Length: 116
Length: 116
Image (cartoon, rainbow over all chains, first blue to last red; front, side, top):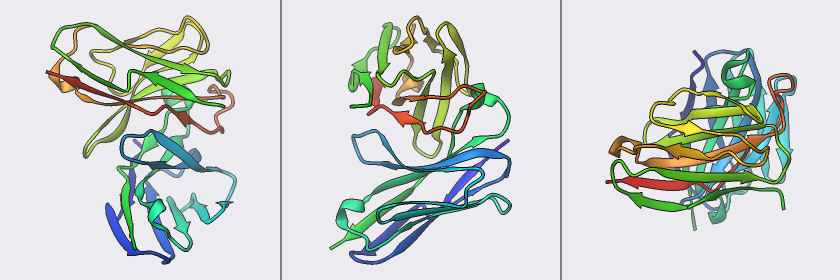
C-alpha cells in the first residue's frame, strides 16, 4: 500500500529565505506526483505536476523535483514571501488501476509560515 | 474560467437528515472523485467516477452515495448523516481515465460539513 510522508509537519521561516519541503513515498511505481497548496477556508490549488518520466518542473519561484528510485520529491521555494504561507500537500497517483487509475494518495502536508 | 464548483461551502445538519453536496466541473473531464479531509488522516478518497454512469468505491465509502448522470456533475449524497461524517469534503476532476492517467487534478473549494 502506497504511503506518502511529508516532513516537517510545520515550518516557520523569515521572509526572503529559500526553503525546501520534502515528500517521500513508499512505492516507486507511480504515474505522477502533484504538489498542492491549501489556504484556510479555500480549496486545493495545484502548483506543479511531475510526470513519472520527468525529473523536475518549474513555475515561477517554485521548483519541484522527483526521484522515483528513492521515493522522494522536493518542493523548492525561492525568496519566500508572507503570501506563501499555507499548507503544502504532495500527492501521488500510484501505479496500477486502484481508484480507477487516477486516485491521489496524499501526504498530511507541511504547514508553512513566512514571517515578516 | 476552468473550475470545479461545490455547494454548499458550509453546512451544519442534524443526525439522520439526508443531504446532498453538489459538484460541477466545466472542463469536460471524465474522471471525478470525492475526498474527505480529517486532521491527522489527510485526504482520503470516498468515491470516484471514470465516466457517466460509471462509479466505484474509494477507500472510505461507508455512509455515502454518488451518482454520475451527466459528465459535468457528481453529487455526494449522505442518506443518514452521522457525527463521524463531520469533515471537510473536496470534489476533484481530471481529464484522464485509467487509460490515460498522467494528467492534473483540479479541486473544488471544499465543503465544511458538521453533523450534530
